[in-house]
Image (tube, rainbow, N blue to C red; front, top):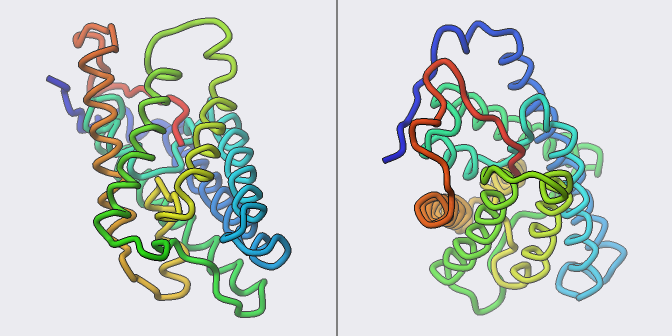
Length: 255
């Protein structure tokens, strides 16, 4: 069984811990700001996200963003950017509960700040919120988010958590970005392909449009949990005794 770690006084008073939390805030702000701005640009200049050109532009932007933000945060906050992934790793004992709570708070805060600022810069133009496609019900959308998030987190486990060496670990940020881009291209017309509650929270708050918002929390959380459980129990060859204690946590690049 995974051992959930609450955290320790040593972790809480470590200056590097505060720096990692602030870095997570900054990276999530930049990730959401540029990602939402790219969606707005696609809506204006590429025929909208309902066109293949607009959707491809958004997918490429998402892929590049994730790859760069993960690479930037690799040695500091590890570039989680995503509450579903952070909570999933806390449940698996890979990060402490204390770190998880602060990361999720700053992820939501960074996303909200990014969308409010972008809406102001755009002259009050509403930022686009994640929404279900035509003919897609909430349950169908949630299932799509489960599958897409499962794909992403399963890949993260294989690329990052599983102790491998060589070219895979070197290319980890790029590979994670590619799976996010591919999922965006595949799931965009159905659920919006959020895979990230923070990415959906900021636009919803800025526009106060909470229509089917639960889909973008429930789907990613279930998908992340399933992916972690499957990989951890069927593929990950690591003794449970090697899990981090209350004095430490594993910080790996996650999106």
